[in-house]
Amino acid sequence: MTATLAPALTTADRCDRCGAQAYIRVRLESGGELLFCAHHGRAHLPKLSDVAAEIQDETGRLHGEDA
Image 1 (spheres, rainbow, N blue to C red):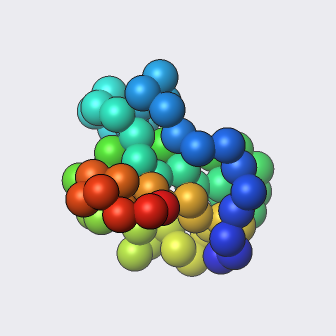
Image 2: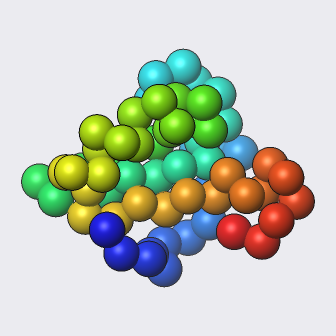
Image 3: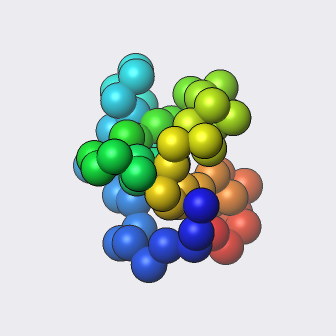
């Protein structure tokens, strides 16, 4: 995993699992990307960390922290 310079996630980015606003982007080593809301991101990140090339986590925005 590395830090990313990808554009910030917007309200148009939706969770692939439930359709809520996405706060986590996972770029896979095999190509492609997955988007998750904070809830599903927390649930799936432990396993995705093994196959992720990059993880962009903007969940700090939910608490007013700089992401």
